[in-house]
Amino acid sequence: MKLSEIQATLREIRVAPVKTLGQNFLHDRNLAQWIVDRAQLQPEDYVVEIGPGLGALTEFVLASGARVLAIEKDARLAAFLRQRFETDRLEVLHADALEFDVRALWAEHQVKFIGNLPYNISSQVLLQFTKYPSPIHLWLCMLQKEMARRLSAAPRTGDYGALTLLVQMHYRVEYLRTVPASVFLPQPEIDSAFVKITPRSTSDLPDYDPEVFTRLVRRGFTQRRKQLQKLLREEVPDWASASAAGEFDPKARAEELSLLQWIALSNFTSPTPAPDPKSGPEERFAVVDENDQVVGAAPRATVHGNNLLHRAIHILLFNQKGELFLQKRSRLKDRHPCVWDSSAAGHVDSGEDYDDAARRELQEELGVNAQLARIVKLPASERTGQEFIWLYKGRHDGPFQLARSEIELGDFFPTGLVTEWLRARPDDFAPGFAECWAAFCKGGS
Image (cartoon, rainbow, N blue to C red; front, side, top):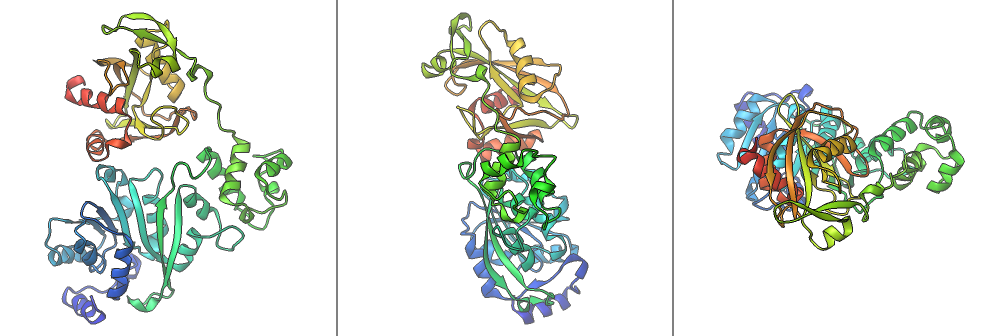
């Protein structure tokens, strides 16, 4: 909409911009088109737009053929959008974006995020929708200029801080352009800026413990002018060795360390765990025949290398809400790294039965014990990796102590969402889990 059209529309629907909602309406159509062009939208894309207002961006997003979920807190504007854009490709959700369950987006194949975020909640919204792991592939955001500079900052600059690192540990942030206040009605008191955020590849950075990294970064930036060795002496008593390992000045302050140096510091504090020798190529599995009768034992490498029939267990843990706990496999795994899997799973070792293996894997991977019940047995197949699988079900609300060498992270998800997620993004999951979930949903429960 042009400026005159926005003014007329606001009068017609009797809406005055509400400052507490951060309502500033974009009236530069060329800029709106430029923003949407950066998303390179396709008809198969699903776009989440926060604070659509009068639809300045929505208009161009819909023109691309993409489907849109527009989240608008103001009921009057939500009603206007539904009337203005009468298409089944647009869903207008009258809601507070901060209360939206981002997990629901896993059920969409390709999600992109576009928004002229309200200044008063921009950092909260961005942190919520970029919480790792996120189902979103691309973020294009209009933010207050100061926030954009902080997100995209480089070391040794005044804008570089804890927020910079906590976002850049998982994402690449590109500052695209400054946007003057004059393109909005009413004009905000400060300029805006446009940023592009994309997920990092798993090969971008070394393996590290995100919890340790986050703790060190937050503490390191509590007093920017102080030397890190004074702020982190409790966490890192051998500072001379730590600075040598990270290749930074022992007298460095927080803003002088790059992302890679912060990772090196966290790895010095909490080294990447060595793989469990029991899980190495010489780990011995029970080898079975086509009737699942034990016929011998062989090392892991031999079993997998020769596609020998063997045994495994999968465990599905549910919380009180009925949600399923899924684990995201570590990048260190030799098979199916970085995909989602059952709550716990593993092979049946030589001399071990299924029930013993289930109890052991639950303790080793999640650090808990729970009552487990056998649900269904899956035959060995290519999809299961030539494994006969007994599927178990249990209940536990956490917290869990995840085995870092096995699991990157985990979370609970509604069961209906898991089914839709598998349909939309089958490559997100280990094939063994897909087989187990299909069996469970078919009636194994």
